[in-house]
Length: 363
Image 1: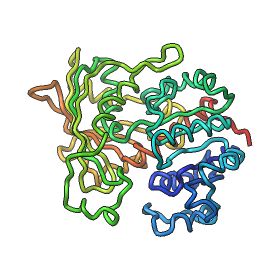
Image 2 (image 1 turned 120 degrees about the vertical axis):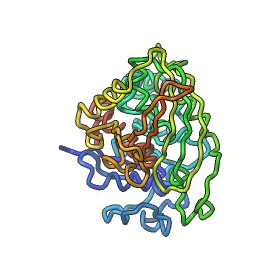
Image 3 (image 1 turned 90 degrees about the vertical axis):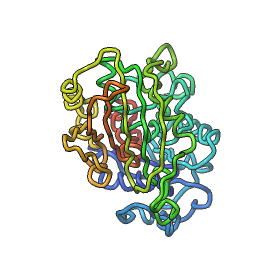
């Protein structure tokens, strides 16, 4: 098939680098343009990244000598070369909102890893298996923006990936009313390595700025309903969280407690998890895990080191499901924060948007 031409704005940061690695040998997507800050503009990608390459694999050879454009002043050069862009820019929130709208108004779809547009009422915040129906808001967004092709979608915060997908099939059938979640989040979620953040070696920090607010509120937009020209967030379940930084490089783990309106049996929960699939699995999208939700019967699983890269880092792992004395049940879950939780989740969203005809091959 003829590939979609892809741009990455914010290509030199950790998530941008992850996008670069995911584009290498992608069956649908071909990397055609890279953009970053004015400090990097005009350099080759290898020069722009310098000694800041943070991936475990080397910079792809085909990318090393690509010239980096300015994400802010070279918008027309980027959009002329691509069918859509991934956004992973590191700027102030208002600046990101304006920049992503500028790309959309230049008739370029934007699949964003940033948080700036997560609460824009007509911007879908996608977990592709959980709320794919939200892409139906895109025509209303295009009408507001005055575009034919351009639009913005975003992915949700990495912290919620480990528990919202396991909640979803249970919430649909049994109505989840209350949840308590404690997340134990890897340092790559802060775009750090142990080399750049030595303070995290053998350390735990019980605070991640803004993370608990996102972890409690974003699931409500994920479970919201399209009403007119906006997505109206749900009001249930009530979620309370604590988010803790731990000395792991990759992988966000969650200790989860849940209460239901109609309490299921444990075997029913496990069966729903096993059977759950969404359009990415049904359409066999390139980045989709074959088994989205994996349950481990072993008492000591999932483990960050063993399981966060399951199905190329795109699956969710759960274990230790058991009754609780205060809630109905509790379990532990795990997701890869820079794959399923960041760049990989955005790539899967882009694949769904292409498969559903929202992104066209126009160049």
